[in-house]
Image 1 (cartoon, rainbow, N blue to C red):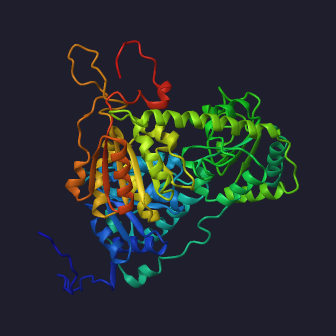
Image 2: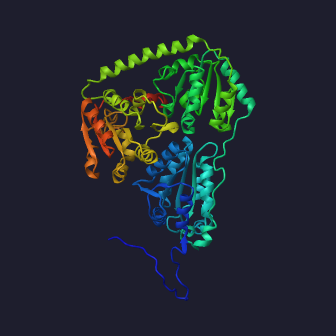
Image 3: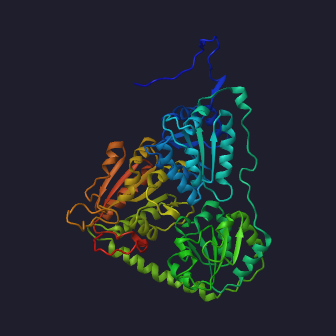
Length: 585
């Protein structure tokens, strides 16, 4: 039975008048106003003690609250919102385990450089410090500190507007990341006169204050780039986040420099553009003599700048974080500062500069691209008739549908499903692909799907491995509840990596990687009122995906694959320690 909470004029035992809204407000209402006045009007969360009324207060002031089934997925939505908008996504959770569930997403946001604010209800810090065994007792403030850019604790209602404004600034300044606000129960419950509370609010000045690189660094970078015989530009998700698309386009096209995009930078320049070297990654690594790295980290995803790289390559690195420079390999020309200001300075410095690049460099990459793309197309064509379908069969059906709908945002996670989709689906628009990024974690799918749909209003397609979907699948219900324009495609091969694992012991039980090849994920659509399809052929898949996108309503598609489709760890099996026992996976 629903309960209604109202305020009335009542007299307390001591004769005083009880607080009454709107003359008096609580810390919960002050929190809602603090977020609203900074333009942070979309909040993702899961409510309970002590933050339920805070969510209602957010709706009261005109904000949008999206309720999830799992705090981690609400956090993934907030993080994706931050990546796509350059404003912090906001996560609201309860205390203790709710806080910890959310913190996994906030940590992921910090690692992947997405601006995000996690606000969690918390026990009275005095009771926590005295170890009194209070309700959901946990020192959340100190637990969060190692995993976030900044952390604030609000012990009084008067602290809230300042904490929110400072959290916003911390989340978006310099390298973006996750920020935590410990919203204690006393602060949330405290009552203030509305007139006094009003004095607490302020509009922060220059909440994002870009810092330009120094002129000498820019001259050095231009000198090295202009003298290169085999130059290349490597684009990372930091470049996509910065929304400096026109500047990158000018640099690439005006100076005829081939480019290679990391996964979430795909589409920043068209994957199929004439200067795209997407198919020539190995050649770029082995032969380029100068590589300008824009918004990417030279980490494990780039072999730490060593190994297969040309030992004489010179890196020019544009990054907002000074500590990223020389992290794994010496950088010949660091350009540290705001991405937009750095590119403006580089383009200005390059006016009148003549490039020394070998004309055969671009033409050789274009020839290699043409040859490799033809081989890949032949591979997809050969797989297109496989029955039962494998990953390539399914992707051969999906590829033309997404090509016909270029403005759809693609969310992608899995092992083989991630790797094969990344290789198959080309992007022509920036910030239209979101995946597990630098940490390569599983469990961002439904949260990121929701965050992308809310942040942009665009249609979203999530292509998920069956194992990956299991981490977040219950929040497909959230997609349905809010009637978001999202189509979820699940590649079911019955396992982690595949469904043919064998128990190597005597028990002959299920292998560690075995899931369920006969699972009917499409039935979730029936449960929550979404269009649902079970497909076994490429045509059925193409038709279902086309219908799902066109409907702009929730849709789920169970793609039945062969159990032997997929390899252990997809394209990164080399990261596994070498086994000494024999096993089948």
